[in-house]
Length: 459
Image (cartoon, rainbow, N blue to C red):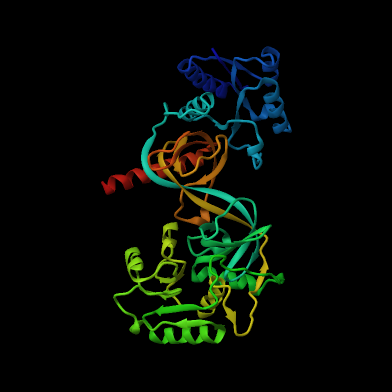
């Protein structure tokens, strides 16, 4: 039998912790013992004891340097560790990824959450079916959040430091307060080029409010930078064929004149002269017409870039950029479109060279990626991914918020990953929610209830 050891001085917490530990120990055929202090544990449990499976220790027993204390315990005893902590603890756990623990559990204990997290701690690297809290099987999404560091900003895009891998021509969603537009705080951007230190992005979707804020940031900044913006690595054309489809014919003429006065090598297609039975050979389509994917395939040859003038960008998904290169809100800012054309086709020759204005933007941005959820509970979340992540990885996740200005993220620990993909080529991953305070549990429960209502409504 393996041994579970808990340390707790507070009588009420010790009673609640003991009841939970006894039940889980009996379920998993383990022994359990309780000490009041870490000193009592050290006197009675010898280092290197092979049957010690789990130590549950309160934060206040770890002294002024909890990380050093935990590393020393882990080195001597080799067991997994769970730390308990009062909800009002003043400590900040910014470096929690460095702590050699499997979870934080907050006091006063939620009995069901306590027992479920103890089960996960005692069954590492195993796919766990929850015992004490209900797991719902439902298709939904959560967001995986990762910090990146921006360095430069222009009207057409930004550069960030290299800290992870991005794929050229892929589109990514970022959160940053500069992009705030009512309840939204996100922007979509396409990675177009890279050098030894930075990735270069162009905006693939931008609201009018976000563009205005970016312009104000540039206008009132004193940190102007002379920098080279490479533009799209995948667009080598020096001349382009452009088709403009807009409801207002005057806007079409104005945009054509502006392109012609700015660039050499831009040629326009007269839609009236096109053969309706043949696919159009177009490099750039600027349109406010709504096309289906099939219509795009039927009417245009492959390789076309498309600027879509759309009425609403609030519900954009990554799949939108299969057909659309850039999505612009239902307004025509000619200056912005001309600057974007230079980034879309960087080999075009300007009649009068006009460098892109750039300013320092040394601020964090948050990259967000959707994870396809297949099951969730108050203790764990199961999701699918096309490539397996490493067991033990830490993820910052959030539930997609209605108000992105009030976005709350929390940490999760990758507990289990399938060794082989399913029939569709996806790997199942199981996350254990980490350090779930009462407010986060309430948010999780509300989200679960909303998903349940949504499912019942669509049945």
